[in-house]
Amino acid sequence: MKAGEEENRVLLRRFVDEVINTGDVGLVPGFVGEEFVDHDPPPGASPDISGIGRAFTRGRASFPDFHATVEDLVSEGDRVAYRWTFRGTHLGDFGGIPPTGRVAIWSVIGIARFAEGKMVERWQRLDTAGLLGQLGDSAVVPQAAEGRP
Image (cartoon, rainbow, N blue to C red):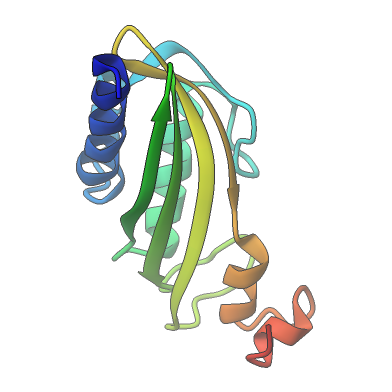
């Protein structure tokens, strides 16, 4: 593995630990470049650096004990592929779903591109159907709400 690849992996792991898991969105500029582009922003979030902070703030309002666990990080060149597991207790409105008090566990997989020591692009997919099913939104995901895959 090249030195830059390892630095990018370390930076992404620190982003999870120091920003996502603490909810300290004030730290985002230390990890994300001003020219950042999110190719798959969450609903209601802008595809730029400001959208990251808003998305995490909204997520933490819905799941105050929100925590991400890094499952995989694979580096090649200026990109890091990642797989994380998110866990949180649904204690606030989430996309129009009132609080259920349920603990939900869902995954995200993505690719981040780095330049000059900061994340500058991101492509990712969350297991939204699995999350909604755990929250009991049977209108959206009937089988998952019934505990079936």
